Image (cartoon, rainbow, N blue to C red; front, side, top):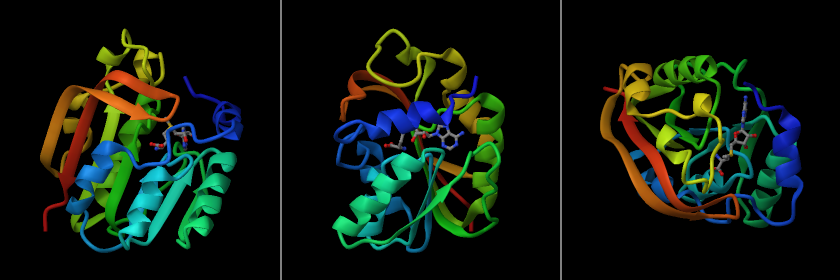
Amino acid sequence: MTIPPSFWDQRYAEEGLAYGVAANDFLAASARRIPPGPVLCLAEGEGRNALHLAALGHAVTAVDLSLVGLEKTQRRARERGLEIATIHADLAEFDIEEGAWAGIVAIFAHLPPAIRRRLHQQAVGGLRPGGAFVLEAYTADQLPHKTGGPPVRELLFGLEELREELAGLDLVHAEETVRHIEEGKYHHGTSAVVQVVGIKPA
Ligand SMILES: C[S@@+](CC[C@H](N)C(=O)[O-])C[C@H]1O[C@@H](n2cnc3c(N)ncnc32)[C@H](O)[C@@H]1O
C-alpha cells in the first residue's frame, strides 16, 4: 500500500505542527553519535529533526514526499537563521549518494516493505566510514495502542527486519521497547517502537 502524497500535504496544511516543535526524543538523545559532517533526513516532514541537527552544526538535507511539509521546513529554518537543503522526492525512487553522509536519519518513516528494504540497504552504502544511521519507528505491537503510526501491519517493522536490512552496520543500539511519546497531536501516548543506531565500520 502506498499512501498518496495528498494525505501528508493535507496533514501538514493543518494549523500548528503535526509532530510538535521539538526533535524526536530518540534522535535528540542519539545525535551525539553522528560525527561532524552532512546529514540526510529521510521522510522528514515538517523538519523538526533536520532543524535540531542543523542547530548542532550539521549541513542537513531533508527529503520528503510532501511539498507542504518541506515548505514548512524551509520557513522554520529561515525563522531560526538556519539553512536546510530540501528535496521533494518519493523515496521509492530516491537514490542515496554512496559514501556521502556522516549521518542518515529515519524517524517514523513507514514505507511499504520493498521500498523500505531498498532504502535501508542504500543507507548502509550512503554512510561514510564512522557515520551513523539513526532510526525510530513503530512496530507491529503498536497497532492496539492507537497512539500514532499507520494502522497498517505491512508498514510496521521491528528488529528482525532491521538486522537484515542494515547488514554492514555495527548496531550499537538496537531495541524494541514501549515508551511514552508526546510529539505533537498525532504521536501521543504509550507506544511500541523500534530504535536503532548503526555505525558504518571504518
Ligand atoms: C509520520 S511522518 C514523520 C515525519 C518526520 N520524520 C518526523 O519525525 O516528524 C512520515 C513522513 O513520511 C513521508 N513519506 C511517506 N511516504 C513517503 C515516500 N514514499 N517518500 C518520501 N516521503 C514519504 C510523509 O510525507 C511524512 O512526512
